[in-house]
Length: 148
Image (cartoon, rainbow, N blue to C red):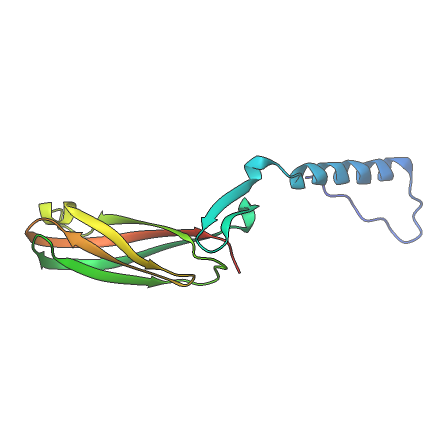
């Protein structure tokens, strides 16, 4: 966007200066125009669907290690939790397992993640192992919601 020089004290405002001001205002208007593609819809449990500007949405990306070279057996579980803040309603949270270190074992590859509780400031879940072995697993978390 073009930057308009400020006039000096006592400088007469001529037509070209007023034209530059009008052009800048029109360009700014294009930038802030409401458009459906600039909005995000977030489904909340307590308040239904919230439609906010995408730039106003709060996104938190988190990572934590759940198992690090730990023995697993079919049906064994490891609990995890992650704290965040500044959500007005319970956010939408997604969790993805990640193999870490050199332990790309079958036990580390054969896992399920179950989110057991999501609040406006915390997510809790478990990683369930389906195969016997040793595993090193991390969890990527992505929370999207309406900020306070």
